[in-house]
Length: 352
Image 1: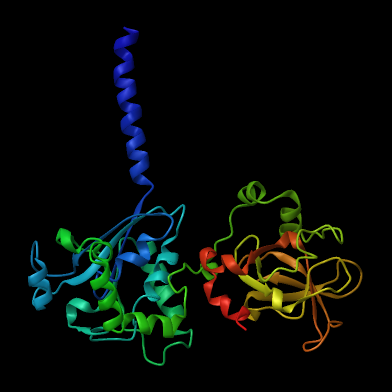
Image 2 (image 1 turned 120 degrees about the vertical axis):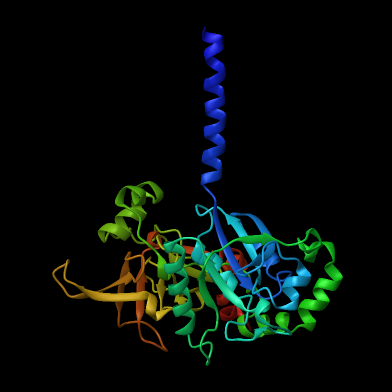
């Protein structure tokens, strides 16, 4: 009886395991013009399981490439992405999407014109819809584009996989693909607009949601937790980065939001990492701190709400400020890892 009982138990475990594995993935669908050019940026990302080129949003069942390219089916050329949200978030995918299209083009993309080449975000849940709208609004308010963002945000509908020769076209026909990407104007536009390393994921600290206290305790060291969550102070000359002289940036250890650059770091003689200014003033919040029977100016991160340290008006030129921080509140990212870590836009700080 025991042997017979093992068979259904094993089957249940196997089936449950497969179900659990499948459930951890989510789907994202983006239309960004020619789908040849939209596969590579996403396939290179950690957490992306699969990227498929295809057609969506049209009126005809099982459309062919010839049907769609003729422009009468109403379909968009699009890519459908299967991703693990525990590794890469939907807002991070949106960031990559924006950096690989011309979001103000209402007639198509680059050399390709027509409804089939227009841009759109097809959301698969209300959460994706909200995150897409927040991302689009942030782009519109960034000041990078003078014209309105033309990309539509639409509910996901049936997606048809394109013919096999279109899948991974950039690998199968690399020479032709590269000529097309350059010749269409996409490659030049992307580099001009976003700079080199544009396909790296930019961390979505503006959409950061602070974890529960239990999760923070488990993910941070005791000193990191004490400093960031309970306004603690590490002992002078004991932090990991007080004497760090490498080039790079310093981000909030909790949220990842960029805070300071090695370009603005100096030896204040205090034993704590000190900076003359932040690299992103909007990520810094100050408030009066009277905890030591004297008024000091506390510095916190805006999105992580982490206690970082204090700022004093006894720093060197040109600002005269001393942002005296705790190493435990900061994570250092060296210059050579900026693109890989999703902070490629800050490479310009270190250009000679």
